[in-house]
Length: 394
Image (tube, rainbow, N blue to C red):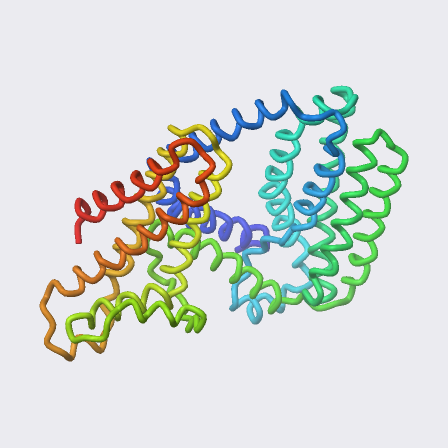
């Protein structure tokens, strides 16, 4: 490598290829269909609500708070690795050129989120405020500027404070940004400008504290490892990530559930599979997350056909992933020491998955009890899960 820019470039290419490799499994056909229906249903509900929204609705306050919180979360993407703590020490004086590239990517990879949130809020602003088009888009530029300051500010704070009390730093920045956006949306441009200057001063203060400080490799490496691990855990809900092993938790508060599996020799596999499902984070949180998403959609979307399609898609996703997860695992298990029929584990997995999907159907149905024909949603979940369990390979 000629310089640290080349180091960044090579790592960036590897990082993008790694993300793309798993993204193709995340955004599959059924997920794309769910997203299309979610966006369509959400847009329809939003447009209908805008027709009846009151003119005294606190749109500016709500938008300022949401945008301020999103702006404050600006975790830097450095792509640093554990060996860098040793091998990059001789190049520490040249690390600013590496971090310049890293912060540029951090800004462009995060600014789209706050931009989308603000753009979605523009129809609401036009419905309840007297802001002109110029003022609305001027605020958009201000938000982009604040995002740049937030990225620089969080990096400088982490650099100087080694990441300690980062939530305090984020809280302060969230307040400053929210107030700046609030004042801007109330056409108090002078106050918005003053708050932006305060944000600049805040960034400069911590940037000066970085001068002469050694690069906190350990903190940035740990931060990068946690960030990638979060991505791998998310990807693991859609496909198998070989180097990811789910953690195990006791979950004492769910021990009472084991009583539903009667104590007998014939239930050995069923008990083992059920215990695996409850205690393994990947399996348990997969079911909880997809059940929660389905329940929220059913509770707030009053378009029956959309609700049924989304519930069916999430039921399919939950069933197929739970079945594959519980059937996998070629590691040694204690049940291998005892004479059990060859298909006992498959039968046990099918029973546990069926039980989990019935519970999901009941929870989702109760959340949509105020919606028309809510009982059809329960039937859709149960039927789709049964068909998926029987038609997929064991």
